[in-house]
Length: 273
Ligand code: ATR
Image (cartoon, rainbow, N blue to C red):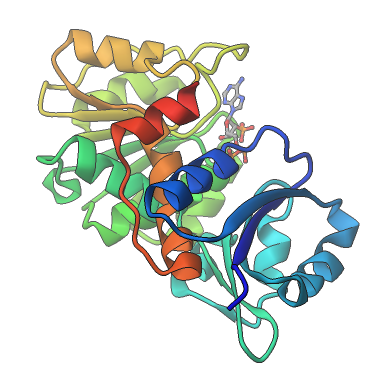
């Protein structure tokens, strides 16, 4: 049997951490395979993806700007990819085409389960900051995990309203100006915006939550964001955003290479290096 290949497809692609993640697992599990970054312009996406199976590729991750196009051109799609409206993991099908999945929400949830084992989405309302692609995946996962209510705030309020209309009546839109006040009500608080990332503006929020609250951030540069530091100072459980990136890679690796990999400290260090 020829050795299976997988890829990550994006434009640009040099910043992607995925080759490090999958490269580590291929070596750790002694699997003969390869995982390659491929830079593909938006207009070339469909033809490039069609050409991959004949070159030995069994599937691919897709990243910005292809996530919506990847879903739109799929032969099959998982329920979660359809609900999130974007795909990040493709598995080529024997009869042509591919199945599109979105593993970002699973990555979000499994990161919390691994690093905050007592976290329970059903324990109370969640507060989600941001209404972009990451927010969609996280809203989906919080609902699957049983969150009874989700407050969402976004600088551009209309984007949050669009998500609320799509994801149903458990979602309540609040004003961006009210986020500090809303933290008092939440048992799960998630920053899905780019605020707080190195080089970006800061996230200005004053946490008023109880120490039972879990606070997490999708930003992982820096690993300990100001939000997480503030949360830790008042005794909240915190989980950094690197694990979401690592855990979202698990289902793809399993589908392509046949082994479900684990996220361990060595992997974290390799991706941080
Ligand atoms: P992603 O797919 O990573 O979620 P995105 O769709 O670009 O990326 O979403 C980025 C999020 O960060 C949005 O919620 C965005 O708010 P807007 O919808 O108002 O743009 C939020 N964001 C980015 N910069 C921001 C800033 N300076 N202040 C407040 N929110 C910001």
